[in-house]
Each structure stands twice: as C-alpha cells, then as structure tokens.
Length: 257
Image (tube, rainbow, N blue to C red; front, side, top):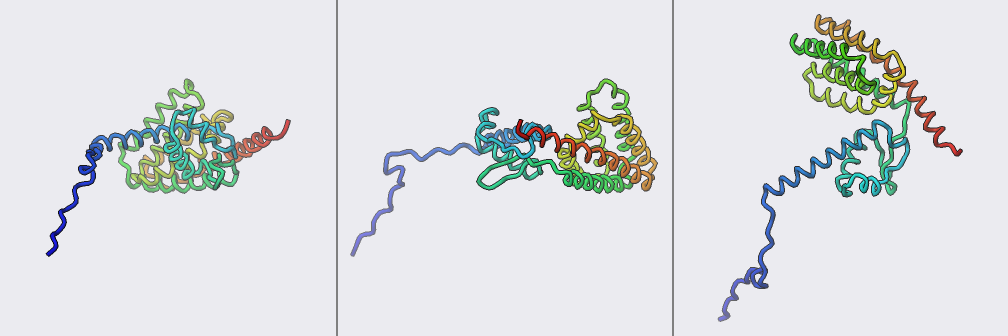
C-alpha cells in the first residue's frame, strides 16, 4: 500500500522568505485620498487655463512639458485632461493627443440656448419651491454686489454675476440643474469676460438681475420668465459678436508674418 504524500509546505516558508507585507487599509485609503485631491487640484488649474484660452484654439497639449511644469506624473495629468475633454474644453485625437477645442460660433449659440432652457426651468421651479427667506437671501446678495461694484474688477464682476445665476438656479432645489448650468457657464466664460470689459454690462445686469429676483419674490412666473429670457438673449448677441472677433484674432495670429 502506497503512503500518502505530506502536504506541501507554504512556498515562502519553504524558501526561507517572509510573506510580503501589505499596507494597512487605512494607509491605502489615505494614499487614494491624496491622489484624488491631487487630480482635483490639477484639473482646476488646467480648467482655469482652458477658460482663459491660455491654450490657443486648435493647439496641441504637450503632456510631457506640462507634466514637468506642474511637477506631476502622467497618470493624474491624463485623468485631469480626460475630465476636461468630457466637459468640452479639449478634444482627443487618436495617436496625436489632446487639443484645445476650436472656437465655434455655432457652439456658443448652442450653449446659450441650453443656458436659457436651464435657467427658465429653474425659475419656473423656484417660484413654486423656494421660500421667501431663500429668495430674500439672493436679493440681498445682489444688492451687496451693487454697492461694491465700483471697486470691483471686470473679472470680479463676472464671477459675481455667475454666482448670482448659480444662486438663482439653486432656488429650484434641483441639484442636477445647478450642475449642468455650472458646466455651461465655464465654457462661455471667456466671451462673457470680454463682454463685461467692453460694454455697459454693469448697468444692464444690475437692472435685469434686480427685476428678475423681485418678480420671483412676487411669484410672478410669466414676468420672471420673460425678463430672464430677454436678459440672456441680450448677452447671447454680444457673446456671438465676441466669439467672431476672437476667431478672427486667433486666425490672424496664426498667419505667417
């Protein structure tokens, strides 16, 4: 009768080696949190550059150079670039890389149409859902901006305007509306910044914003929707003109001297 073989010894023990130690779960979680935080900071920095058109329309993103400049590895940089592509700032071409998305008048027009639709729906919901106190808080915010307007730079005024519209949409109590509006606002940021610098934007915005929030406070849905639509469509006309000017300027800069 054959004798049964004894069970094989644990391989690391048989070789005189210790089993490989694994990082504690807490350490792995902390490292993952740091990595995610690094990607977010990198994304915000690159998003700001894209919004300012530091990258010229159609220009290729040099990932190696950008990584050296920002002191980051390829993995978080690629993750941030992928996020910018998903938000419409960049486009990816197979075997070539990421490029700053070209300026297109049609795209600006489409984005403003989306903005009108989102904000109209938000105002429609806000009149039914927002409390008097919430509406008063938005009105007080804009009143405070009006009192400090002469001391504010165009960039500060634009950010204040974007914040007003963000608070306006938040009155709808619909987070998805707010998230979509934020993406649209980023992509039309440059054209709106030039609008603030070049036109009588302050007076027009003051009057429109004050009128809209008062109409919401009175629960006058038709009047508020009409005022909001006129306000955004007035901005749309300027934005289209500015986009045409920007397209022409970048085209002229690219022509051989």
